[in-house]
Image (spheres, one colour):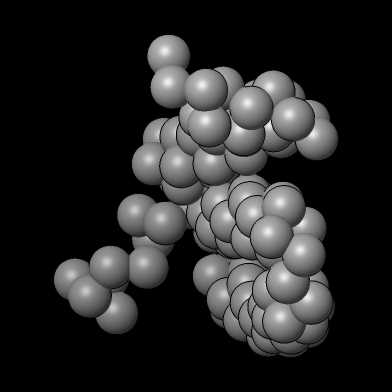
Length: 110
């Protein structure tokens, strides 16, 4: 193995951080693909977004880049706004139809 790659993966928790990022992203993707309620879809997207943010923070810290930390903070703020709007839409749809199943919200049923 290349010495630079080896020191990158083992230095400053790199291998552990990348493993956590991969696990979080896969959990989010699997949740988004296989769960069929609106709330689970939103949670899957948020898990994937948080995995990407963790990856961004790790690489910004690795390269001593403060702009990466600021960018990740801005992404967290946008994600919080997205969750607020998403939950409001989900609550409105639940009150209207009484279910959160995705199959209920097709064009044929409307």
